[in-house]
Length: 282
Image 1 (cartoon, helix red, strand yellow):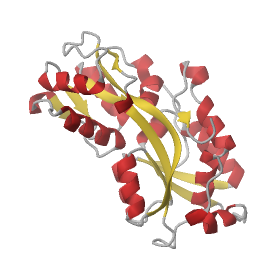
Image 2: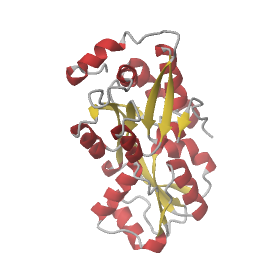
Image 3: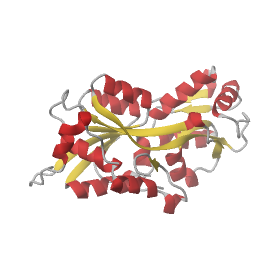
């Protein structure tokens, strides 16, 4: 299994413009006796995949701070941001992210990295979706046979899944559609136990597929399955008490040369392929 980031967990250079006043202060993050803490609300895939095992310690060392990670679905992460309970977000649902910023809760949506989603299912593939385009596969899954495990947790993966059902124009009957209400790793394991289909991000799939003995990837490589991640500093104008300087430092770090290199190289040696692809510095 991929190791877990062991810090506190609950559940190219950045442009100026709106960010200028924050960024000018990043280089002067104080190194006093009290260690500063950054609260990061992030998707579960960044934790479950093990990416934080390389990103977070490098950031903490560089800025002499501690990062408190709240690993939840994207929807819940943005609710934490809207309530002023997180300094910075790392999320993956572009439509919700743009609304979050437009509503004044975030400074700016900044691209960080991407991967893609896969539809995985039992090798017997009773619904015969293997090799289909994603929307055709979802139509076949709606018609049955076979069960589908949904995250059902308002995560970025769940939001993507619901948009795919809507675009496909149909959805499985209630007795074949199971909402797990759990993170991606737990939903994947449930699908494996039930010999069901599910939508999974590539990072979670690659980091756990050796433990998954029933399922295999059946649909992938479709433009509809593109999965971009962004970082958003929660608005210091709306929540003056947040650590906006350290939040901006984190955003700059994961979009800068060191962070983008760590993202680019993560997973190659252990899983035989990268789990994420950097979007700022290739």
